[in-house]
Length: 345
Image (cartoon, rainbow, N blue to C red):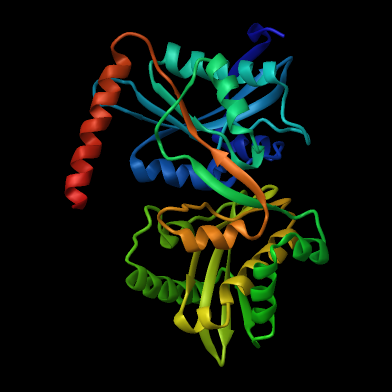
């Protein structure tokens, strides 16, 4: 199989949802709804492309491109992409190399951008194997923080899922299920306001500030991505809440907030179980538990690890343009990050 059998084609934004729906590893970061808002947030422009072989699309990618003023070149960022799984199996090695090579030739070689990508978690690539494939396609692994998480296979009934969880997790879930909790779910303005109240209190207690806020997600509306808010109540009080996003065959935990009263009755276990059930009922095949950081947040990492899901480890790779372009772009990025850090401090 040769790279010449593959060709890259631009796709109109109006046609993107139909194309992306053909891929089993499509996630919300590749949805039209999310990627339009994410690009606008940072002043980037969007490019939707299909990588074809023999007239059929074998991969697709929504890239956010941010260029330097007057230079016309910059960073082409491809999060959770390219999507490549049109069937149950991951494409063979030569196909993956050809797909990545087509993207590198277009965006790094021809257009002169630094091309960065992070494969979708739902592709379940083996890190060492994908690193080798990416290297053969002209990419190198970067020091950027990888996306690490666990994903729950939803093609199981409740008994099989419960048996999968480690004993301590099952014990805490059963305790929560006996705690007379009630559930409200939906995406109404009222539920958004109530979740934000819980979330803001959690922020004050733990002292964190997410880069992407719940408000950003709540403002999104589109046919290819939807949100669900789940709130646990006890004694007529909101005690915990989560927000999940659903795109295609995947669902992802986005935000969570639990009060002291909620922690006492294991409300996080209750809501995780309810979120899995909801995602499965709405046709999702996988439930991404939303990322882990064992150093910064070991308690949450342990909570998710005990669910015995499929481990996701998705590093960031990049391909560089020739000449001085990569030096100019990376120098500008370094200066911007330093200035941004000073403003934040």
